[in-house]
Image (cartoon, rainbow, N blue to C red):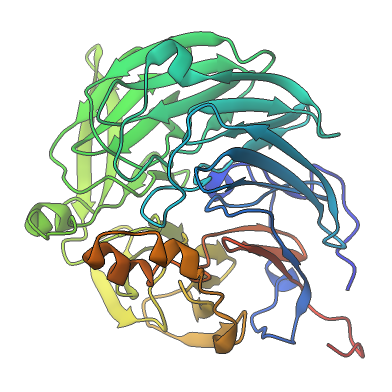
Length: 440
């Protein structure tokens, strides 16, 4: 099952959630697959990771950590066509932390351009890596800005624009948004933020003809100037926005996701915070405005998405909410096969919802819920529970809950024409349409 021959420009999923991605031809991705159907290859991964894969040409990159104290940070390169591992770059972490299901493990997704790969780890380590697997530069942000303090770690993925990288570090200690040079990792500017705990990532968006960096995080949506890091505007009538990333769909507005905390204490405010938001420069200053809110929807782990005139949120229970983009009217709410941790993928008139435990539902876009297929990535008996992660917990309540997170989970995806790549903590899968007459 060879993947289509194309240039690097034609096959790009270079950043978290596909920011800067190339066009994905709808007909090139299968609607159905199974344990032995339309699966081009699957490969074991070193250690464990929660980051999404990224793609540049025929190259797949991802990150992982290994060791009882997350002793090593890894960057791994795979061949998209064959799945063969081409190299692994490993480096000791600068700040050790327990390898636990309750703490992020290689959660930030790297980003790539024609000059190299840039990877950030929750330890504060930031790396520039060449396409041949050689270190271009490295630094640890905690050396300059102090320790990162968060009970559950951090997960913010770097984003990029031209010669700059941007990293959001929100935590109980010093919080900040930093811009760095891709060439050498040196700081270009750093904007201090109010301390807060969040796992969301920044997004580069154009609003009112100005490119800006948007951070949706723990009680506010903040916009920064991309050149100097100055604060342009803030929107604070929001709650529960600690996980999902703001989504730009190219229509002068952004999608915001939010959900109630674990105790449900802010449920009412969080439901009002799933919204379409815009901002404009009026009479010399920036003003943010909520266009409408999806007050019955919540977005727990995956970010909201837009497709063909409709907006979709999916909550921790696996209920998808579809709203009309123009009016905000709720078209439907329907339960999917499983809870979804990964952000859904919209391609053409289809949306792929990647269930936590390996089932992916594909639906048709539109105001009515139409299920096209449900697809199993691995057999139910191949759950791969890591018992060590359960037994290492000393608190009985945490130990009981750990089993929910110690098995194989669909964490993130990357898609280019001809290939859908899915990442779990321990494996990498490539879904590809089988050639006519070829047996699985």
